[in-house]
Image 1: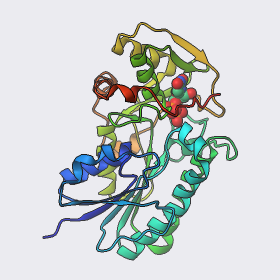
Image 2: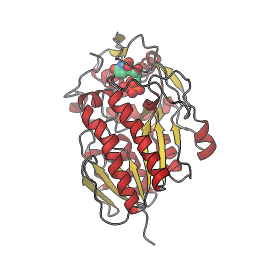
Image 3: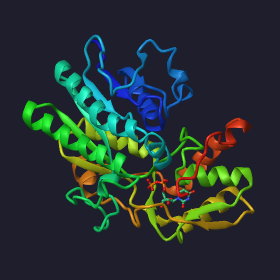
Image 4: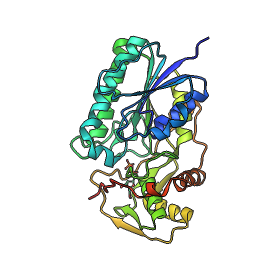
Length: 326
Ligand code: UDP
């Protein structure tokens, strides 16, 4: 019997590449697609030698054509960190909207099941805490994060419309802050920024007074949750994240302790519309998917730190790094 074939967009990115690994491991044929704007081929280089792996260098906001059968589509293409979507706001909007529409069309034509990568950003700067899936959010559509948040909100609406109007099988995962190997050191997100600063001997830049919170999930846990959601029969959004919440100032302390850095924490202005608190309510994932995160932050951070330490020295010097709070 021929194994099932899955199309993964954003395959050369942080999450996409881990998903490629998982589906290959589970015996699927993987069609990987990426336009390589924020993704890197080094993340999937090890898969090119496999007969069950193929790669398309393509931007999904343009018409998507893949010959042959496709059983599942996982749409993970998108800039995903604030400095990225500030640098390429139009592409961010296009990949979430036009890209999603193209892929939904492809899913319909191929009779494939489609899972989209949504985000805790659909909740904006939340007034409900922790965030449950039935909370509608507090998003500023014209603020700097609006291009990402609204693209993802549109993406959810479009996906539900294909589900209800065309009867397409769809799944929506709302991903909370995730970390692990293959994050880009210069993507501006807090964990690679702090670890990069620690490794370069610079002070750690906490924004605002550092009292804003996030809840960090290790990538393997996230991938397990996504895998279970894809094979569940639930079409509405499901939060996948680790509810272990921490302030950014405490997080900086943890990184200093982990890396043995001698530097201090310095405080810089808080970027506009930066959510004050974020923690997933994962009751749905527990109930529907029997899923809970397993990797605690200390273990996950250690693995991630070892990964960053193993990178060549030149990668520690971000070429085009621009802080997004200035
Ligand atoms: N942050 C920080 N210092 C940095 C980078 C980020 O204090 O050098 C803060 C940022 O303001 C936010 C939190 O860390 O409150 C998480 O930021 P990130 O960009 O990782 O993800 P977000 O959850 O905001 O999308």
